[in-house]
Length: 616
Image (cartoon, rainbow, N blue to C red):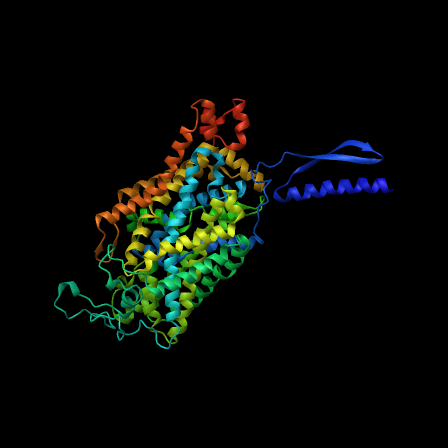
């Protein structure tokens, strides 16, 4: 009896070990009787057809719940640009007609690229740099997107600090941007948008209290002559920036276990506030006119190239592809997670949020236009001017204005914080997966990253900080992102191979992507991205802030920042080539996935065959 118990115990331990290994995907287990000693059966187990996941042996943490991942991705993709960018583009480019190129590019490029990044991270279970073991020579693409995410953090956190400053300023009986009776106001300040009686042609229109509060009360822009006269950091904004950095650190220091809990607030709160603002906005006088202007269809605008260019660029930036965030987030998924369904859900939610926010924005813009008896075009704008000037000005005219202001800036705070968390997670995950020393000290490394981000962000909270902000926004996150995504899709679809990538997805989800997705990855998306990159360079306009034109050295600095991230790709490729002896076998190692290096040793290099490059 005791011998049979020992045999059962040994068999149970083998099955239990097999179950633990099965956490990352379905596998078959073969039990082999090795020998029988003193009535005790000793067995050995092997895995049949184990998944090709390169991280199977790693003890990688996963999301506590599937909803944590979805909310994190939605929270990252749905950011401030959904509120301040898309509605204005829709209004400017023919209203409802703009949806034609927008939805077309979403289907042929946005969704396929989003799906590709989720699958890439989930299968390889590593950050933006580590996944390029599928094509070692293109590992520089991973470092490029990590560097871009770091650059964005330098100025994106400042927007959240502005929102926090406005939030604190809203806890008062009278909002400070209501009247022109404050110390920061200039003689040009007027409570109305009427023309100025001044004969000075440079002073044609007076400024509003809301505009002066933002530029003079918050930014202190009037104390700077330009980007070469920044001045010291403003302690009020620097203090708000400290709070943002502290919030980011404690949301990220333990990985997805903590950030997955934070997004339950930061990703859902904006929808509650947007719905409340919509209910309030549609009851305002002039709201119908604003919504009508937002949705008015002018199909003739589709004949203009600028409309299609705006739609293409908006798709690339609104979904957040090319920043390594989607790869980092999906790398913490379970191996068998349905990433295809996740891609469809999150991209659809992103687009619906952008479209719905237009009703909120233009109901208030219609109200402001009627209140001041001006055309909607005079109050419609995008960027920080919409959410820090026009919207606060509208809220100040409502009953219980302080309450509505608090609600609005809480929404901006939550919209920004989860997007900032995503950018930081891309940097942290991408680097700790590459360097085990950093992995063992994640908390300290996270502290180092957020502190470095804080110190460089201080340039953006000086008197002339808005000029630094504009320069970074224009160069750090423009053409370089598009270039990064283009190299990414070429590396996956052409060097690694669409067929192999589809096999990876089938291994995870049990189903190969359809021919449509494979054609998009192989041909349509690369052509689309190449078009957008060329257009963005051909239509480049130097940055400006209002009437301020940046000096030549500032533009040169901006291009240096952009080139510093893009140049990592050829520099790393050159390093990889120079480190090779030069034989065809060594070249094969550079363009072949690391898991296939044994085949290279046998002379089997599918990248050296025409079939590999033509297969879809």
